Image (cartoon, rainbow, N blue to C red):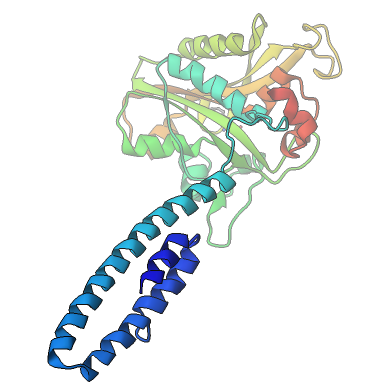
Length: 330
Ligand code: PHE
């Protein structure tokens, strides 16, 4: 049996070890065979040989386990060496990504409004008619609904055409004062040089006790915001119409391409329209059960701001994922 000690010493893989283990300790192994022969011996002999066999068995088992621990350790080290990844190795090809211009623009705007004490709210993209239209003073069959070509879903819901429904959702759950902005995607059935079926808006809503929120507050916040984004531009408020605000205004900045002198981008007017705003219409407050409050709201298209800020001439390129465009925003 002593030659098995050498065999164990000379093992070099776990696979060989397992084979040898079966050879020695298996049901039909050498030890089993030797033990089975005990019954042919005399009582005295049996006792002596059995004792001897048990000692050999224990010794071989000990050697085998010792060898196994050694081989396991060795094979693990070899595997780790073979599979090691040098994390410090620079392949020369890795490049960092960048935020898409639309999301950098959202971040920029959000930073400004947070610094002014606004909170951020979000609402669902699949919206109910009540929130997207009815509660915003846009009753069924009202012609003003035509302003926003809508994707209707089969179940009567729709893809929100504006971020304004978030105003309603928040006012339903919260009491004034409210001071929120809500960035997010909106959808309209439109596709040309300056329109895509999906785009992004930021909504703003401020509501407080009657008399506490005025048009000049609105004017101040929007002027600060537009100067924060575009620097030293002229700003003008033009009377306009939105069903959910009264009075309403559209806000223009002096054309950043020609400094207001008139060019192709501003269609020779010297002005670029950037957002819509107004004092919240009393019908909207009525729809959410608010009494004796006043408020203002505004909404702007992120893509429009981003195109002007980053000087991207065609809106559609914003959604094509062309790396040549995106790489410029690192
Ligand atoms: N929801 C309007 C739009 O999509 C923008 C707007 C928001 C205007 C809030 C006034 C007040 O055109």
